Image (cartoon, rainbow, N blue to C red):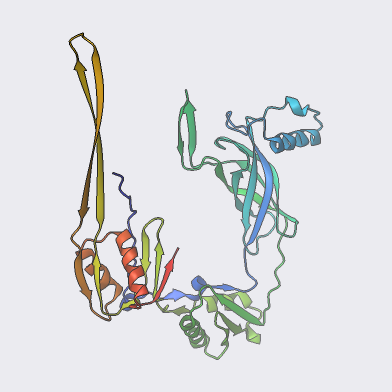
Length: 364
């Protein structure tokens, strides 16, 4: 009998009295200050026979084109690429990155390479969505895995076809930013109106005047006084350092694939009665072989198969959960009747369907 292996459930329960203050910089983004994604196509060389196979045409063509640009004429049909792999190179260009600064790059195989371990990325231009090159990547690839095989057996650890080059790309061009130095627009990462109001009040209390106002359910606009224009970034840092006490979301997030459950502290339950039991079926099949010998000395073999089926049902316990209990009390009560994370997912879905769960239930 196969049993379902359930990963450990994670129950994040935070009491309201123990809420920590958070800075506005941690829950919002400043409009106009953002990262930019870069991408490029390149070749990783120096692999120990773990590169793309000869049938990977785009790898062969890329290698031939590179050799021809270097003034070397080669026959495409004579090129063997088992030490070379075609890769896609990605990077994130941080805000205000200047020419000459360095960023990390991620190298991912696009062919049938077995591993990028020990390889070196050749010079690869990295372009943004507008097609312009903003950085160039090159260097040895660091792979946090391995792929070892011998005599038909092998072992694989992590993902050896994906690697990283720390500080592997040099910025060649700066991304222009059009900053409005008369206003600061803060875009909050979550749509929580309570936190938006708290942020506005915290900024006004810190600055000492009504410079902050709510312009949308996720946006706060802060006026930059004329005397602060010359010290715009100092003023911006002051605004971002304002602290608020974030509101808890009455939300339960369930990942059925892994059995993970994350619950907010403000989730409340109406009075419900919970009963949950498991049904286990065991099927055992045995084969008996009987040999008979007659008076002539001939032997005959008979095969008999016997199947035993056992059905076991756990004694389900009925538990009453009183109205208004917190999520921590609910978990303690359910643990007392021996529920597993998978059982808890089913119970929460049933309680939500019954209208007794006051909070959002999100199933991933």
